[in-house]
Image 1: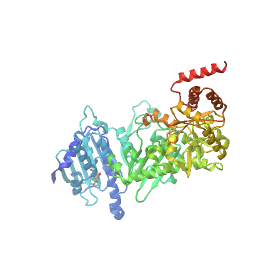
Image 2 (image 1 turned 90 degrees about the vertical axis):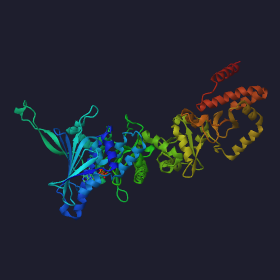
Image 3 (image 1 turned 30 degrees about the vertical axis):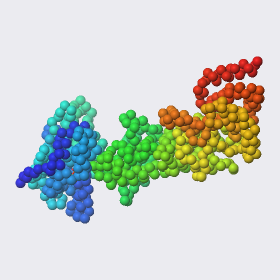
Image 4 (image 1 turned 90 degrees about the horizontal axis):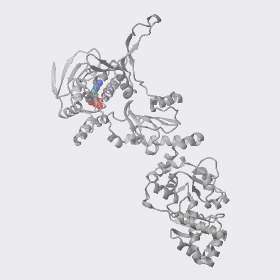
Length: 631
Ligand code: ADP
């Protein structure tokens, strides 16, 4: 007997949305139907564990196109549906995803068509392509068969029928082609194969479809027409490589998989294979590309691919990976997420958060292992991605500093290779209390800094900061394992012995007048002092504690810091002949001091790589001095 029933109001609204949808990825309906089929097989398989009479010989999902009738049929030998199931599941919206979807479009007057793909509205999505759908189903539970028909408008019909096998067969009568959408495309063999590969490759059961095979020709038949026949072929690879036991997968296989999936031509630097079972069950496969992959489509997007139970959900799930690890490629397959999870829900989802934390930990652990066991590889990695780790350490006020500080390597004065903070500390000489660093593009540049004199004599190593972010990173760290970081040109270096220091302090008292006048001549300087760090050089510029010259430059280049300036201190070497000459001139004529002060200050600026504000004035004074000297 045929029974006509009304859809519930909610369902009608959803169907209405689907029918009038202009969503461009209508193809997702196939993913949804295949996923339902796979769930149905899961359920039958589960039942058969306790009742073997309910088992099938083999489970499969069949996708068939009929070009003449313009139908696409998806058949499974899963659990099937009882009449009540049909009314309850296909006649009513039970799914939380669909409900959420409705609420969302209710709020937005003109719904963004893209949200359909994010919600994945299950069975109903088929109405994006169908003008009519017929569902034949025989339930394993009560052994009865029914046929459900609907045009997706107000009502549907259910009728008893006879079917030989358990399971469900969904027949989609495609809509007429329009100018915008060629529904007939869904009947094409290549299209069906592509969609199965793209969305359902890792569904656990074979997804089969009819594939054209070219008959082999004998030599004498060469000129004849090509003969073909159709063969049923399994399209999906079923067991995803990441679900296999780690010991069963070779590096070679993983590399091949990586290259095909993430479109790289080189093997990755490393891979991380995670199988977790328990409270949270998931598998992850992560890769660090040999060279950063430049993504032309959306280079601003980071993220891992997300699957749930082998069904592809999202291409770039950014909630799975922190910003600073954006270079990591890979995927996560979780058994604990619903298929219909939306982007909004992902952000809040606790399992996603847990997985993300774990993924981050695993990556950092692998990098730590690499640093320890395969230094060369780590250095290669650091060349390209070290900067990301440095930013990661600096960002969020150093929230990640403890997990990242041991993965940073920097060049140093005394070593040929880059060293970690731990290695620096390990090599500290007796009496050394701090970790010294200098900003400079390389060793040579740093060696030339006048401030280096004393440090060199002491044999202390100095970390060389070449990247803009380096100094900011050290500011966030402030210390490593109880040892403070110290810039060679900021604050007091405390390198000379007490006697010498005392001598300089006495000198300061003695030469108070000239120091005062120098200070007056240089209003840009916070202070002019006798240096406790210079040996050879006549003078140098240092910054007071806080902002350094390098940081000032970086901030200005990024239009940040609102014009903040490092506080300049001119340090003069009282033992240098230049100071002695200046003193002599000052005693003879106090007015000449300003000129010398400016010259000295500008030289100090230049050594710091800072251009004088008035180069012309500098040049003129220098010329004057040259002329005077040969008088
Ligand atoms: P979801 O699959 O997320 O629950 P759907 O709207 O796609 O949402 O399907 C609703 C319900 O209909 C399913 O939960 C399931 O009980 C039933 N169903 C759908 N397709 C099948 C099928 N092929 N075999 C058995 N039951 C099905």
